[in-house]
Length: 141
Image (cartoon, rainbow, N blue to C red; front, side, top):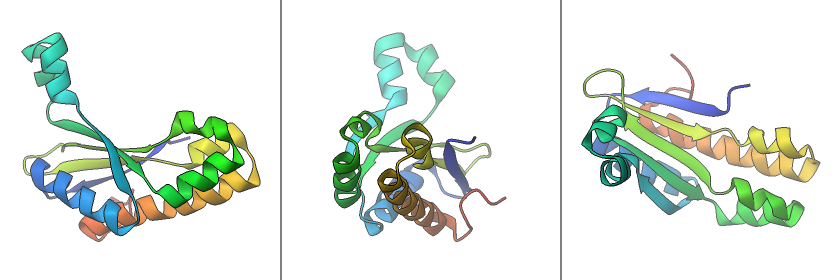
């Protein structure tokens, strides 16, 4: 099972981060956390480790309505929230990869109908946000 959905977009890293934030916001997600992996690695492990990962940010996205439903169904799901979205420099110059967790992962762990409904909604919103970045269905070549 794949646990992420990804798109490669013809955007600089900086533009991809900005556009990803906007696309998530349009789908009702706010950013609760932001981890600049490169800066963290550089600070904790040194410049060599930072170069190995390159530009890489993890955005902790949360849609409060969906999170509320998920936690009401199963309080333990808080360990899987927020939905992480990664933006990293892409495989080609001038491109970026944007990757989001597939909320169906929660269903695999839970199996309840209430969690399935929340995961379906969250998944549709995350895919719509990724598709808004380049106009292609998320995961399409």
